[in-house]
Every structure is written in structure tokens, then in C-alpha cells.
Image (cartoon, rainbow, N blue to C red; front, side, top):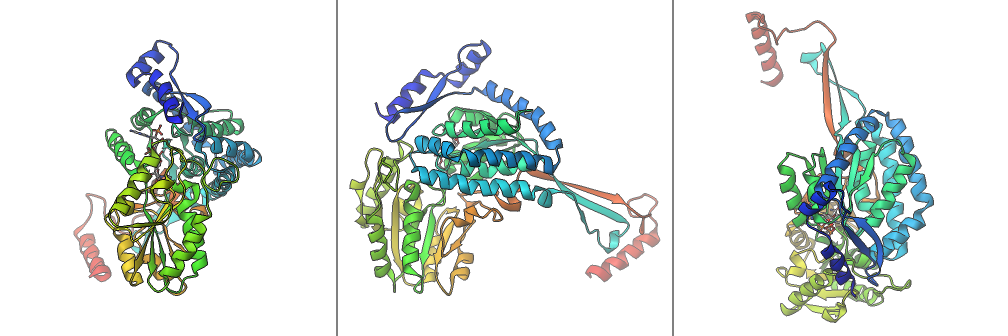
Length: 514
Ligand code: NDP
């Protein structure tokens, strides 16, 4: 039985949301679903499908836990997060194994994701007071009799909905920062990676046993939808743009704020003076690692005509030597979702039928679960390989006259998540002109690893930011306090205000602004 069949069979046995709720209320057995090894279809784990009622109960428990967690000092929370970090670091191999089994990605890639995540966890805990703690603010000359301060208080309970492609790094970009800011979290991992989510939550419970500050709700899309409607104080969603729209619509019903980290169609620009070896190396990693299943994966490459042939020769040499497989030597794992190879095949077919050429791979590269690298050139700009997120190990490479054309084509996308520029002279300038949340100059991916840097997109890639100071503030509200420290210099907010004061105020206003 294939992975897809096995999953469907199991879910077929599960019942609808309404039935689950009734069943849960009647004390009946909760339906379950399996997470599967994408390479073999073997069952990796079995998890409950949380009904809407069970999600609501979980959020109610989280609300009580949030009171306790939010009342701790930054240092007390920081100490617990440090212990959690220690547990994860010491048992990293265990977590990497589960991630490998559920996603199919090579274990070493799974480990890299954990390593990068731990730096964020450390940063969020270590910087929470500095970013969010109470600070005095200036009141200005006209209000010198007043004092003022601002601090950033936790929202309460955050619902985190995560994807499967980076099942540790991506949701932890929200979870770590939300916890460090003093919130409780209810985490709904993807149905493809519930085991990874459970492992993280269980490890947290070991260092915070007193209250359920971080809880797990597992299930399918309906469980995520129930979390959106559960009355949480914010939803942090990472996933596809289409699901993001559904999440936002559900959250709108209760005016629940949302953070949307959605898909991308990232570009890599290669200027005439670029280090072509470095650019080709980055393009294959950016486009083909994790089997191309990355929100900040390189999908489009624009190369200056002066170096196009040389770059393409280097790129194809590297790409030809990469292999997708389920053995330990393969650099690329199987596709995690059984439906994704079809999407990749459609994109390749569409591009080829409109005149593109495959220098590596092509339609024959797409197997049932294993998809070998594909490099397409001369790809029409209106083909879906250039306009839609492919999410597979393919690169679409086009020649440009100059870098102005490259920037125009790069920005001709509804997405705007990450990007990369390879250039010696104009790297920073070109990077700033690309409409994307993050751009690497002579690098790919690494902006995501720097905890000080905000991460997020524009357009169909979403809004809001994880990571860095913005990522901490995302899970708080600004609390402003103004207080009187001296008798009023000008008594303005009183019915006893005199004509003399009005005149003085008018004179001062003209002096200051006129
Ligand atoms: P999906 O949009 O399919 O799912 C994301 C999450 O939403 C899953 O947990 C899913 O649950 C849940 N979900 C599904 N339907 C609903 C619903 N109606 N209401 C609430 N939640 C729901 O994305 P994928 O998991 O396939 O992830 C891949 C996508 O994520 C790509 O587009 C990628 O670019 C994007 N991504 C973006 C990142 C960023 O930082 N911008 C980072 C990583 C990935 P279930 O799986 O159970 O259906």
C-alpha cells in the first residue's frame, strides 16, 4: 500500500468534525491518523484527531497556564527556555531521526534545522527583557510636566499552525518567540509531522511541569480551523498562501489577529562580476536541498548575458551530480507530500510545452515519490514554473540583458519572501531594489539563521515577522503609561482652561510648527 493510500484509509476510518465532537462528548474513542514515512509508506506514529471541542478545552487550559507563565519574570522564563534548549541539544539525534522519518529529508539536514533553531531559542530568551521590558520615553517640551513609559505585554494564548517542510525550525520561529514574550502556546503541527511536534512539546513539559504552557493539538486541516475559531489571542500561521487566506477568513470572525508566513517564488540574480562558482553552488543548494520544499527555496534564476553560458555550465555540472533517494548517501530525500510530484510535473510540462528546455532532468525526473533535479532554461515568464510556487527540486534559469531587467523580472511576482543576489559591485544596491522580506548578498538561506534579523514576506508571501525584535513584539501588545510628575505647565485638559492659555497655546504652536 502506498503512503497516500495508507493515510487515506486511516483517515477514512476517522469521522467528521461534528461526529468527533459528539464522540468526544459521549466519551467515545477519539479518531486517529497516522504519520507515515514518505519513502516506504510505513507508519511512523499514530495521533489523535482533535475535535473542535477538544481544541477549545486545550485553549482553556492554556489560558490558565498563560496567567502563571506571563507573571514570571523574563529571567525566570529565560531559565526554563534555557533548560528546554539543553534537553533539545542533548537529544538532537532523536529529534532529527523523527524529522527524517516523517519528512524523508536526510538526517543531517534535519539536524542542521535543529541547530539553527536552537540559536533562535537562545536569542529570544536572552533578548526578551531588552526588547519588551518597560522603558521610559521622552514626552517633549510641551509636556515636560509628564512622564511616560512603554512596555510590551504578552497577548495571552497564541495558536501556532505549522507546515511540514521544516517541522522544527519553522514553527519554533513563532513558538520560541511567543513563549519568551510570556505567552502560552497551543501548537497544531502539520498532519505530516505530528511526531516532531509531539517531541518538542513533551520535551518542554519536562522543564515546565507545573502548567501546560505549551500544548499540542494534532489532526488535519479541520483541527487547524478549530484553533482559528477557539478564541486564542493570535494565530501564527505558516503554510501555503491558499490556506493562509482560509485562516485569515476564519480569524476575521472573531477579530483574532494573524501572522501569515506563506509561500514564495524566490529569485537568485547573477551579475556579470559575480563569483560564478559560489553562485552555482548557492543555486543548487537554494533550489534543490530539502527536495526544493522550502518557502525560501530558489525557484527562479536570472543571469547576466555576459556570464550566462559559463554559469549554466557550472550549474548543470553540479545539479547532474545530485541524486534523490531514500538511502543514506542520497543528498535529496523523497517528496514529503504524495501529491507534490504531480505539481512539479505540471510545472515542467507547462514550461517545456511553451518552449523551455531541460538541461538536467525534465519530465522523466519526476517519479512517484522521488523527484530528481531538473534545470530548465529559456522558461517563458508566464509559464506556471515562473509564476506559481513549484515546491520541488527544479530551477528555472533565464538570461537577462542587464541587472535592471533582472530586478524588474524578479519583482514581477505576487510573492515576495526571500531572494539572493550574487555580485561584487552592486550586491547591496540590487538587494534593496528587490521586493522581498529578506535578501542574501552572495548567500542563500542564511538570513533565516541570524536571530537578530526579522523574517517574513510581502504580497502573497504574507505579513508580520518572526525572528529578531520584531518577532518578539509580534506576540505582544504595546502598553503605554503616561503619568503626571509636575503640576501642569499649561492646564489644557480642563473646562477651567482660560482664554490666556488658548492664546499662549496658539502662539507656541505657530512658533513650533508654523
Ligand atoms: P498548508 O497550507 O497545506 O498547511 C499548513 C498548516 O495549515 C498545516 O498544519 C495544515 O494542517 C493547516 N491547515 C490546513 N487547512 C487549514 C485550515 N482550513 N485552517 C487552519 N489550518 C489549516 O501548507 P504545507 O504544510 O503544505 O506547507 C507548505 C507551504 O508552507 C508552502 O507554501 C511553503 O512555502 C509554506 N512555508 C512558508 C514559510 C514561511 O516562513 N513563509 C516557511 C515554511 C513553509 P494539515 O497539514 O493537517 O492539513
